Length: 101
Image (cartoon, rainbow, N blue to C red; front, top):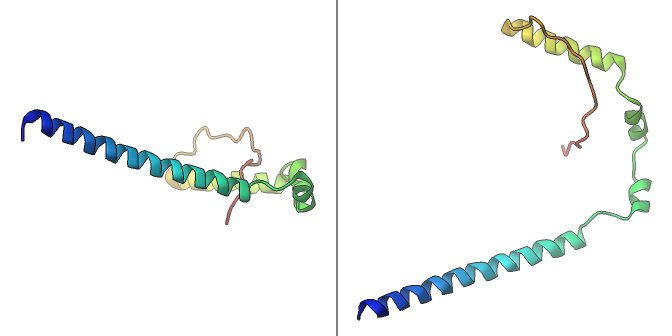
């Protein structure tokens, strides 16, 4: 077996392996795309009907009691660590992400 034949065999194995991996990845990609279509976002009418009434309260803002509680908790935590100097809460806003738990 000559050196040229060894290189041809190695090239064939490399192309076969890379081609197989590429085809499998394309198959997985198509499966994920189909799952996205099947389990995708609901229609706007269905989403509006399922919206909880608490979402209307969240849009109005955060209650002052909640802001005071968060500020007190942060202040207490920093006091225990000894790094409370110069700490001022300037802005408190509701997070835009949703909890999944």
